[in-house]
Image (cartoon, rainbow, N blue to C red; front, side, top):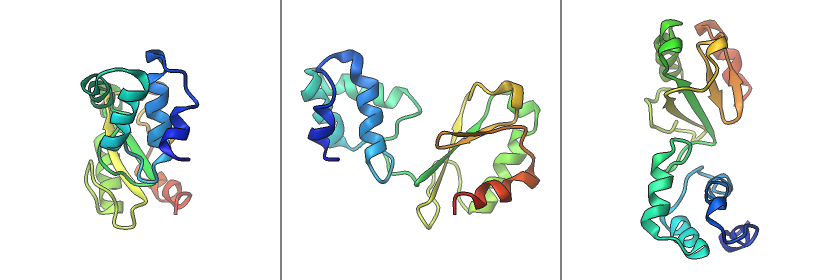
Length: 149
């Protein structure tokens, strides 16, 4: 959907800001917010560009640079760290031949760290887009990633 059409689905109220940013980012094939997106939101909501930029850069769920089709969010909380999440992170980086913040050559995957995914009961955990995976072991990763190829 075109940017203006998407914006028109939301009332011109600041309380819609987060939902609008999500919708714009989800509408972008590279899963990020472009500078023109932020400007359009500022105009639509009659809020300063700097305010919109501040919100978009504050929340880790938003990105101002292109990302892969599948965004892997790896939990980096103390609980997940105690449950060996650094081993999981290293294995995923090696499997995909990318580092945190990078996009795989086929543009399918990006890796991001999250301070907490709220999944402490199934640590270590990760999300791939909206799918949550927990109680991870390195041996599980190949079959998980096969689902996204």
